[in-house]
Image (tube, rainbow, N blue to C red; front, side, top):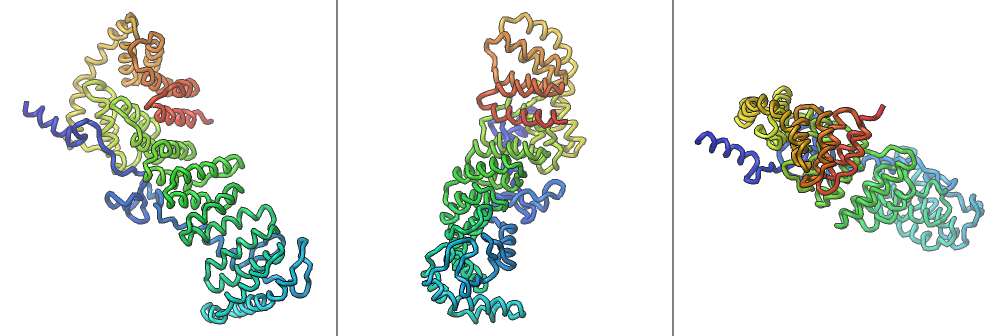
Length: 497
């Protein structure tokens, strides 16, 4: 009696009074570079599985975006046939290279601005220190403002914009550079294929200044134009998120993903992970499940499978039976091959869901696998006791299957057929399990149809009948639907040549 009480206490300690283990930090949220997780809680972790850096948090760096912009400002960028890094020579020839003219008003005030830019460029070429060049441009803002105010034609705006970008670069004035890029866009003279890039620059300036509302419009245009800068879509999603509109940000990121796929491009892993962070922290369950599924569909590695399954559980009302099938997904996808720190709890939960008293063969198999991989400890009383119980029941349990199957076939409904199929599936006899699940579905009655369909799909999967498995998973509804979707993704991956 005392031993039974002790075992019950261990069980409650591991799983809580309701028998369900709470998951705290999902491994997909570890940021190994900072030695912590992305949600700002949990223990310090020096590295992820295989040394992978998993994902950054809300402190988005966008190094690529900044580097690209720096190169554009320092070396010049072609914009509608005009070099962004060069001061436009309008004073001597008033015909615009792409049509239109400089206005007389603009020409009258733009000469001094042109000289300031040319002098600064010459000083830079000679190696003059940046601080000295900046000091020489003390009155440049007022001189530029006159030219900007006088800009009327498209060519005026293009030139004024170039001046503002160049002077803003020397003065380290983000607002000035932003005005310049917008003026160039508004000129109407940029080549069509460059407009998304310039909108990206404009959105980048706003985002860097924490003007998230101001960043949304240009970044949306950049993303809709399928801009090559991967950071644009993440910035757009994060801008919405900073404005407490995370669902809109995720929708925008999904549009970017669909556009990238339609164009035959590669979707950056960062998009999936950014979406997962936003959805998880905002408690947007359907979106978190959707994006983790999209990630594992694109990159089906063990860590992504583990994260996708955990997020699905996190935002679903899983009971013991759903947790059992989640463990089966982890086993078949390789998710349990991750390091002990990530999967020890999953092994324990799988054991608890299988239950040595109910499915002793599967329980013993999982415990022995966990022990062989070092994810479980034989000194753990829960593990050793569960293994002992399971092994002591296997022989009698197997011996009862023939009689159970006979009774199931004679039964008026499918309830006993499901239970017998469950037993065969747990003993790695998927062919017999498939037959009995189909029998149960045909008989009907008081059965959980979604559970039977899920496990029918698993039995078909285990026989490499991937198309049949996907057809079964597609019929699953209710709380199991996201789990069935993950199984379907796994079947599709396994069916690839």
